[in-house]
Image (cartoon, rainbow, N blue to C red; front, side, top):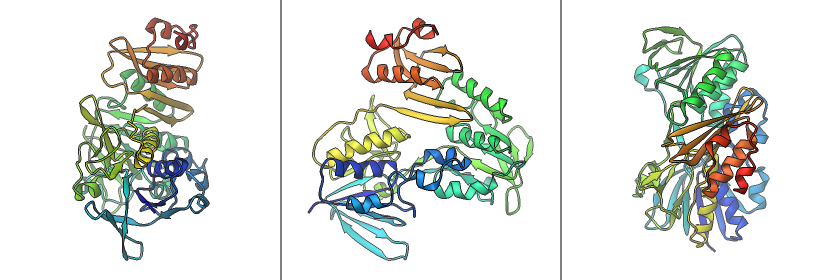
Length: 406
């Protein structure tokens, strides 16, 4: 009986095992995760879960009983310490310290990513300094969210902004610092940055752009921060959201090729034909380079392809990027990739707004703030390779559905 092993029990790993069974694979499946919890959603951790609006069991991607019912051997609190591609084996280190070796016929790596941390030299190892990536991270920081406390958010990406929104809603004094000249600079247009800056400032968040962190102050626990402009802040705790590092160490030690993550081909195969990779840890070829997408949608979609190709179907991965973020009462929905855009068209409605990105006249992405209809239309256009007339998009009286008929 064939044995497929999936290392990493996050969104990508869950997608792989679910789709293996959905595709009719009746062999042995082992899903290995180093956390104690069964596979769960990560995006709500910095939003609904931290706000107390989502219970733990609603985070789970599938009920705990699902794995036994579908004959999936879920190993939690287990770390894979080594892969031997020649013998097709993995070595596991269990919670009790015992080692175990498993043989595989095909192996999938869904090892995710880890948050970047502040260097110890500037106080990154002080108590009261948190990252926001795992369930354990969310549970550790949750008791700090007490009205009247002061928090410093380091990093103006989506994780930092979501944490800032939660803190402000809970009545904390929030300061966010971003080294770049504007928040969201790496992932969005100036128009989108302006929108979210205004949103946060209207809720009392202090945003300092073009401002770095020199050092954190404190003996054992953080009590303050010195910023690059020379100012100092009194803070009760710090949340760091300065990006992630793809989980490539296991693959690299096994001799697999690494290029902006675990390098895969169009079929999600690594440099070893029996090993696949999906999710935050994996890069795929696009436009002459290896691209890595950090999103739930990518993890799910790559997981589907990995499952099919572990079963020998040889299906190419065609990415359809989509993302979302919840901040205060605004739901941001993103489709496509805005990299390289040369025009941004703004569409405003009653309580809604969307930014449509064009490159050489071609629609390539959308940021939709409460504009669900605009998002759905643009997403369909982008995925089908169609475009839209910018003047029509900018006209709030124009019926967007007409674009789908063109």
